[in-house]
Image (cartoon, rainbow, N blue to C red; front, side):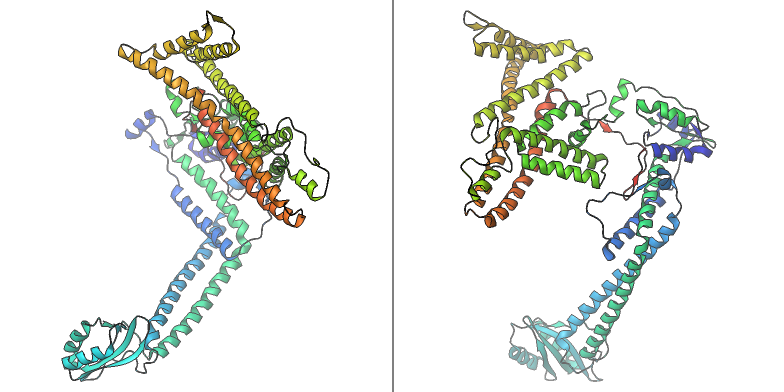
Length: 639
């Protein structure tokens, strides 16, 4: 609770720190609102959103009419948080934005008028040879009617029918195109109805040229003059917009300022208060409590904090704790789903596996170097933050792993060095790099290794699941579910080695199977025990077999990348000339690199989210969304 006089200043400081998420007030105060004791706070959110849209539109228009040159991979300029929180200059920027928007609105109206004038010119083309003013309707006794008849109908036939309908009517052809004959009907006023009825049977359509004066040629000249004037005025409006380009940075700064004010207003709309006191409620990270206590002590306020009750866990926001390595996996976790508040942080648990698997799938020193260089250049030039920083870090670590695994398998842009040696006339074997194994010749070894890694990966997930169950007091669940699978796994290994059998019966394996069957049906009753026994056995066998088989994709992607790289190198080296090798090398490896960059990420993500997370992960967490400074064009200086 804070004094109303200090509410705005406190909200600005909380926005600056970005560590408090204000939420809707409790039911008790909402009940008090009904009794008239408190009322919901109001803000200028609607006005601020309108201003934000106006500034954003003006910046977009400047980028359209006066594009600014920017350096490739340039970082956003940095400002102190107090500069963003200060509203000075916003009013002036809004006037500039209104001027830019006004000019653009005028251009739109002029464009609409241009379309109308062009349509008018197009409609006058068939009548350019007509010397009669278009506003002529006839005389006291005669009528002139302009129209068209489909060109497929012979005019002789039309004239013959018209002569029978009226001896005081005649058609005069003016022009024709692929679909229509354009005509002028001259007849007496007394026979107009009969003439129109006759022509209607031949598809006659009267021309719509009302409101025009002068001949068609004169009207066309006027329309062309109007187009020139409209184009000149549009150029003037566009020039007026370009002249405002000097205020581009002011508009961007004002946009970020208004965006931040809108964020504060959104938070303010969740508050309740009396004439003198405003009540706030929300969430803060526990490690920030001491720092926030010092902030609250600066204001006339009273505050209290507590840990959430288990009943509140579904509503508690989640904020992942990261270091430089685990932060790279934020984009992976957020793409799937944040963990529940009472779940485990998956980032430290998937980081080593994700990075290792990615390197194994890509497995090429050349591609690894490209990834490392791209990540380092991007991190140095654009100084990324949040999601962009996570992507760059993941690219860096994935590149390091790819380079190491490429050194293990002897791949450097496939067998590019060997092909270069052949073009240079080097002896056989020149450029062949040493390797522990080669995916193209040792594919069975790679497949077995992938399966072994899968077993390690899945069992790690089971260990995490068992630990979490024990922490929550479910020791029986850990024993009968994870424990039974481990006993069965050990039994399979002993049976393969021929150890631990009594009378030819693999005792440990049998014990494990019995544990699985009992554990899967221990909560069932009656006929349900029989169905659960069958279901447990079937799901365990097929589930584990399918999960382990999924890890064969590590071998498949490693082999595919190597084969495609080798194929392009071989094609480039066919003529034993660098004139062919270099373009084929660049195009082929660019395609292979792009394909593997995305493919390895997708398949690695699948192994983590489906196989690994399926063993222990509890998702459904709500992201922590604190009141913070919102910027699009500037970065806030980090302390």
